[in-house]
Image 1 (cartoon, rainbow, N blue to C red):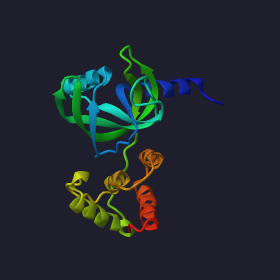
Image 2: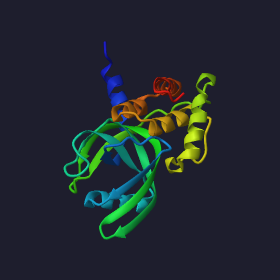
Image 3: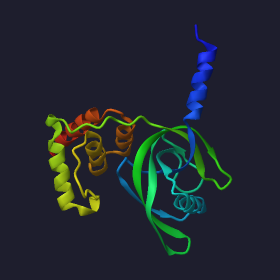
Length: 208
């Protein structure tokens, strides 16, 4: 029989571990450690970016599940990635060029729309994956990433890390994957399994 008091305590604990976060739904997936360049021109996002810079706080990036980037607030996927602004320039009035760095992942528990049409989410941290090296059977992916770093500097792979999570997220960025597949890889919490899936994709497409 369910213990009502225990259930109430569980709900209160979950609420205590959530926080409000401004969300930027996009037609892209941001991964931890990834870089995101945005042209911001809607008033709600200009205000959001200014507030994040002023308070040194991140915003949340989520893939759009339903809706559009511009206009009414879109419905986001439930797993997203924190984005911290590392540079911002306003080349012309009302248009801000922003570069942000992906940090940790989060889960959206609920959303509501502010008066300025900015989407706000009650979010909680998604459990971090354990740091572990790339397994021996998947180390070919590190050579692949080194090749990408040398031939495509715009990919931003300045340093190759022998870390299964890092390698998997970078592969998910550079490989020609469908957007839904990228989201599924972000959702996963098993770095080795993610690498196995990506390595199989590379083999099927003659990349490994």
